[in-house]
Image (cartoon, rainbow, N blue to C red; front, side, top):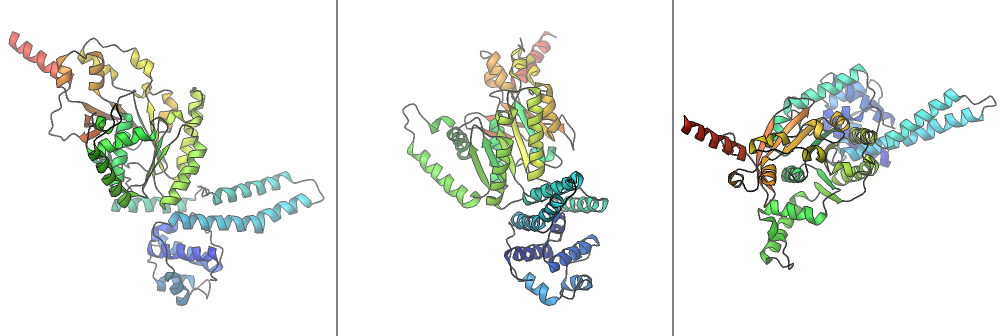
Length: 474
């Protein structure tokens, strides 16, 4: 192989595959330009399918039958080329882009010129084939190669998935242990999870809790805030991470304790050392699915990662949702669904419940607060959002409603403020599961509730009170 830039990338990819055999399936097709590259790719693919190791002897034994250039000297040269373990996507994108460019120059444009210069009438069908192939090349250069697969390719992919399940690498961490137990595949790439609840219930707090956990676990994530400002987000984030009351971060006369600033500086230093390339934030008011996709691809290249979790809060503020009509919602969700398929990210959408349906519910007793427990129907245009979401999580806090409707009741002051996350849809698991956290509104922190912890909400306390009263009467 001559050391042209594209061929250096070919060697880096082949070396990558030699060391990580499962990567050979992620290339989708033979996009190598050099003859040796083409032969080596086909060779290692055949070895992988037959469960044979990628040793030099095995590669030469099979590949040497196709070309005498496949020899120990060539393999030694390839194995000497260094590669970045985190740059697989970057290498693959260069390989596909180089292949697409060569294909356009060597075939597509020539075919178009030949068809258009014939003396006969323009052959529309042949020209349409050329247009289709050109679009395929453009998609390939964008990293959007065709997903059409043969039975053999389907089983290749499926067996690779089963192997990953066997060693545990097929699960994608949500950041929270309790949520991991509840969602069979976690936040898998190419899928959407929706988190919803009424205004003020704690949707953003729960999202920030998951993001915090991901940052601690070095899981790449991207937080797009369309509603809350950067400063407001930082206030909540620092209150949570530093375990300090939210109101200590600001005051009416703009003067805060100097120790707070020192704590923030220490936290900054710690996060920059450990997570400087694993988390990014965007404070924006105008974002569309197309602009979001561009940003996702830029962030992935910056992070040098194939996988990432993207949080969008509030998602329905995106331009795609337009006037909020059912048609606009359906088109928007279709666009976001396609985005996740193309970028292979997991998209977490934070949306609000329909407020009018909540305002019509006026409980007369604390026990009646259960009417506020959300259902899928409480999501605005729930059909479009729920249909395109792989998982739907509802956020509920009885204390929020108890304080709103029964502020004078002494039991409200005694109750535990519990956030409940209920799985209303899970394509791979059972629905109805409820995860519980103790909610600290002063510092925007959540504490997973242990199995042996006895939760007492206002309705629980009232039932106990009524039970004691009945026992006394009896």
